[in-house]
Image (cartoon, rainbow, N blue to C red; front, side, top):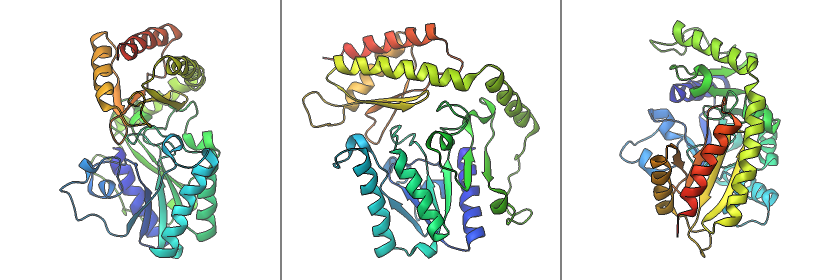
Length: 322
């Protein structure tokens, strides 16, 4: 599972560096096992009643351009970087930090796309202080962003990657992958599970990779995603409750706000829109800290005709709001 992949990444980072500290990011979701819950903050309900948690875990701000008080994406990125510097100054010395754990695009937290410069700066901080960079690509991996991995979208290379979900197209499989010089320091039998490396799941993963390549699904994700974003931004101009439209490839979100407000989250509208859409045959799923965002994540095989049908249902459901 993705949570197990995260557990493996945390163990590996601490083992290789000999350091205890893990810095994760507010709004992140990494799973529901004990270690994964310790680094998850997308909603407090995932943490309530499960402490005490893994020690030496710290949290920094994830740049959220739409909800930032800073002026512009770059200022938002700088604001988040300054938060890390404050951690280093007041809470934990950088030489005690084993790894940063980050979703390159936040999933459960709201499909939040950070400024490109922020992830690049995070890589520089890691290189400067000997800290490992872990990307949780459980949601973003295997074509969802129009590239194999979101790391390629941002041009940033992590040291460790957590993989699952689309890796085997629904068959249960997760993986912790790392640079050879990192993984090579982990001793034999340092990590494992009873059902790890299941041959049927591995065969499904290999077949999935073949289909993604042979059917040009990365290209399809980019093309259909760009088309969807354009259509959704047209909808944004029509509806006062559509606060933000964002995404990369076919990892797209629409964030809803109360009309006439200063970006006040509108989870009530989200619930009604989802119900209307489902009644018309379109299944979608919410996300975001206040459940104020709807994610649009169709299969990578989707056709333009199917996209148009889905967008039409979604548009009617949104415009039915008063």
